Length: 288
Image (cartoon, rainbow, N blue to C red; front, side):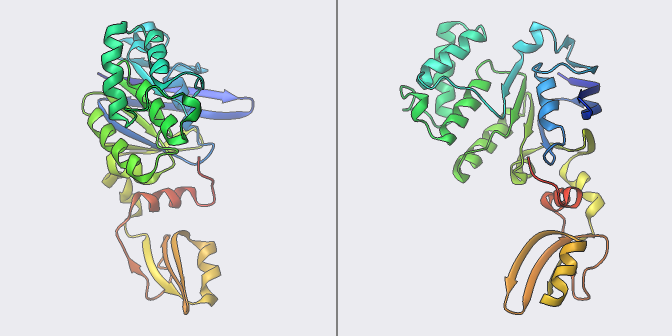
């Protein structure tokens, strides 16, 4: 099984949102990281057939994104997911199953398992209107898995989940990635750091870096520093370096920064993490 994206481009007015992106993906979890406006959501929408590329091709095995066979293999949770508030969770899932052409008896068994997997068992008869944001998000994850998709695309899936739910979700995604292609886009760096087999770093419509965590961290190894600075130096360092963490104290600040040069004589070089890399490339840019 292979998802192939060949020189895909999408432009809105004068802005090129996705610029000649080419990727090949086999079963596994792919984490997509990028700042606001990087093109992540546009790329995901094209992979899901919601948007048509201006140029380029997208296919899963021998099927084009335009074909019904491709859509039958797809599960999708968009960033803004629409619900029918007067539906119960069960009715909503049955409705989505019907749209996906899943036979009613098979759908019932599948829905029971999925609602239990996303911790909604016992709430299936409640109206979605009374659900919390986290419960709605978990229902969205469940509907994306209804047809047991070969390609699962999740745009900001952990938004609204509490820490315990996020851990459970990450474990579930890690298992799902063993026999299908999972593309996970999120601004929560730790979600990707823990479970992604390959990380895609996107900036200004292009894939800046891709690879395993050790591979993509290699360029900033030796550029991450921890140091204590007095107030006189604090402003200068904040201007010159990407500051990952700052803890103020009575005699100054304890900083973790990313930069080419040692920020102070007593600065200590430390092991790089994904958050360091993100801030190194996106210093001053908003999160998505």
